[in-house]
Structures are given as C-alpha cells and as structure tokens.
Amino acid sequence: MPIYDYECTDCGCVFERIVDKAGKPPPCPDCGGGQTRKLMAAPAIHVKTDRATGRIEKRVKDYLKDGKVSDATRFADKAASMVQSDRVKRIADKLHDKTGR
Image 1: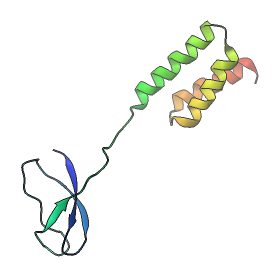
Image 2: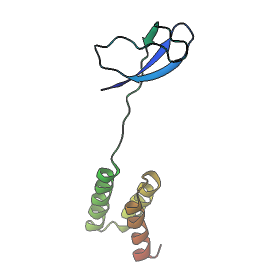
Image 3: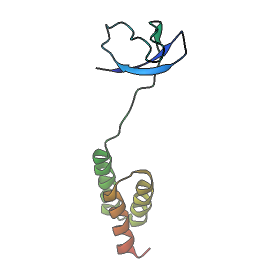
C-alpha cells in the first residue's frame, strides 16, 4: 500500500499514513480533527548500487579493452566519488596501483 502525506485543515499538522487508495482521509494525529487533505508528494526513487556497480565495471572494462587506460582511470575515480560502493572504490584503487598514477 502507498504512503500518503496529509495536512490537517484545522491545526496545520502534516503527517503521513499508509492508506489504500479508496480509503477516506485519516483523522489528524495531533488534534483528532477529521478535516485532512492529501498533499502532493514526490515519488521516492532508489537506485540499486549493485546494478550501478555492474554498469560502472563494464564501462571501465570497455575503456581498457580499447586501450584507454587514462579514460578508464578518470571514469572510475568519478564513479567512486559519486557511488557509495566499496567495489567501485577498489576498482579505482586497482587502476591507480597498475598505472602508478
């Protein structure tokens, strides 16, 4: 079931609840008032790091196959700064060890 944000029109309290789509708006948890309205909210997006790590690893390997070691190193460094993954950091460190840069 989705999580919706609500605002109480009586006291202004903003809260979230898990509610089915057909359900009526829940009462306010602060004042108990029944005058609540659903707010617009941005969807939550989660990027799976395993999938991103695999794509990063593939791109580094493609650079190396083409003989572009400096491009591979530069890309791995940039990826390691953006993706919180030990595996990506190890790839960048391994490239630095091999190239001596």
